[in-house]
Amino acid sequence: MAVSAISHFLFRFVSAILLFILCLCCISFTEAQKGGFSVELIHRDSPKSPFFNPDENPFERIVNAIRRSSNRIKLIDPNFASLSSAQADIIPADSGGEFLMKVSIGTPPVEILAIADTGSDLIWIQCKPCFFCYEQDTDLFDPSKSSSYKDLSCYSKQCGSMGETSCSFLGFGKCTYSVSYGDKSYSDGNLATDTITLDSTSGRAVAFPETIIGCGHSNDGTFSSEAAGIVGLGGGNVSLVSQMGPIGSKFSYCLVHLSSSASVNSTKINFGTNGVVSGPGVVSTPLIARNTKTFYRLTLEAISVGNKKLAVDGSSSFGTTEGNIVIDSGTTLTYLPQDFNSKLVSAVSSFINATPVAAPEGLVDLCYNFTTFDFKVPEITVHFTGADVKLNPLNTFFRISEERLCLTFKGVDDGPAVYGNLMQMNFLVGYDTQKRTVSFKPTDCTKQ
Image (cartoon, rainbow, N blue to C red):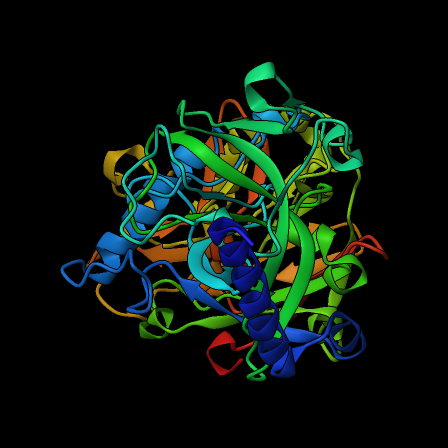
């Protein structure tokens, strides 16, 4: 037997033994379907995150998050429908998502840290050999060292169902992908399958074999060196939740508030039966299907400020009434059409016995100076179809500096309406793609 053949045999043999050992401490796909599981969700400003900057104060962190949202809102477009124009978080410090997931790829599993994003689908990582890659602090994923890695053929069913994929003579019959972003960042590479393993809070890992991933050989733009890629949690066919099957059809998360000291702690993203949101105080609203499956769309009917109800019907800027707002965990503020938001700002300011002050850098639309934490704000309720979500003052106003408090709603001239993560904080938010609902339950997320 040739040396190369012996090496190949030994590699496969050792990999098989390692896989057997790992499976002894893993939850099987069947077990996970029965019981569900939870995975740690790390805030990007947590000390556990590679993005953590100890020199920033809480106000600087929230301003930076808003700046990232301003870039992200330009990337969310309801008319995008193909893989080549998939919308995802860009990872650098001045643009990108807010929460990170630890996932492992391959056999034996290699742990990576990547953005968890409900606004995108494809799971992709930087791979060897990398021809044009951004600088990455950790080692690039080496597919040749994974016994479960497999490039997809041009003629495979997975490649044919992907939309914007391609094949070329130079690709030797392999299916290739290309994703691009609004700031001209991109990732190109081979479409492949491999095993993805998730650590769970139960202490037992969960493995998902033959998951479609992007193995990026050419990636550039404004990506951060600390992150190896993106984990898409959107509604499209190649997102992680879609590829989990019945387990991924139900998932939930609970986001701690940015301005709280608890925001440095991690929280959970729950899948399967663990992802079901139920009990007292739960309200649910329908998920609205559109041509683009990636984005989770809800129907906003009105917003109440105190006893004054502002109906969406009066604003033509919302366009189609049904499915008129995207719920997104990666956007900080809540963005509304400018004309409707102007009415909302007027209604809020009429309840507050204080003079507005200038908003820094135009990042927000309404700010006040204050001297105590007892700043009185009106009660604001968001009325989705079938679900009235009563917001806490921490959802509607946030401290942008030591002395300044600002409204979390922001008007935009272009782009879709987006329900951002400040509105979602201290709510258990559950997605059920089988029943086509999103549920909200007021919750102290620091205790989840």
